[in-house]
Image 1 (cartoon, one colour):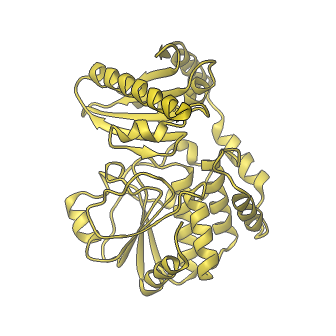
Image 2 (image 1 turned 60 degrees about the horizontal axis):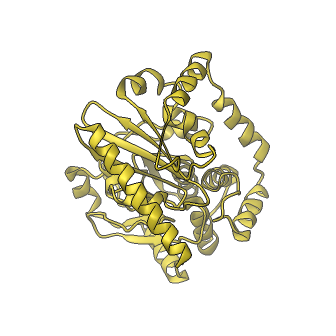
Image 3 (image 1 turned 30 degrees about the horizontal axis):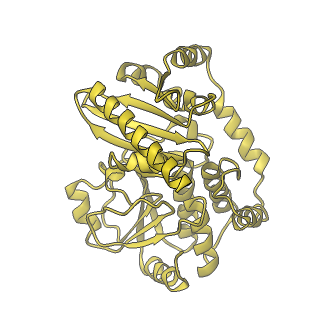
Length: 339
């Protein structure tokens, strides 16, 4: 857990800066986007210029989060502080920390705000503020704001709530604590309507008939391995290109895969023309191993939710390696539970 002195160090770095760039990883989610937008509000109220940067487009399903369109994919110049949210993994920041951008970032202080166990692998000196006792990076930012007397206007409060709800699955994960719930209650006191947020989210969850039909085809293609403990789906590039503008194909089915009787781990693999293969992992309560599995492929995340990226021109080889890895990890997990 971060010390008050570390929060003070962060506060000093922020107050000394003029132009701050906030960076998300290449797998933006509700926590990273909500955290970034909350920081934009907070830092703006502190008189700072803020640029929100992500090297990929924000997924369409996050369109219910107001301000998502202010995230840019052009890396800024002349900034004097970088804040990286929701990851310390170089693999998940591969396109953000290309050599020319690393050279710019390394010239000034860098703060990493994260709540994952994944060990940091960034190629520059940084102040890491990692707290695995909070459910989301948004909760960490809330704690820093309270400690450092940062302003939390209504919009900043809404973004932090969205961040917390996203990673806690609506305050229902094991990592959700009484402190998490009190933080959300305090943020609601700033004028935020939970029902308004959820109504917007539900509108963006609506699917066209074509997407619903595609979801049916995906469900029929699910593979089951390891005596049904692993559910696996493969989304090839052709389908990514055709459907992802409307809805993320893996998001369409991965939670339902996880809810199949006997399934302990659900994984969606996507393949791209450049040989990139991405994996989205979801674990069930009897197999809190998502982050461990991702770690074998250079990724990271949480015990229940994680992801990775690798490169290969042989999908079947990666698939077989993944199945073998899941098998080993589950066996080790079960052994540790009974030891």
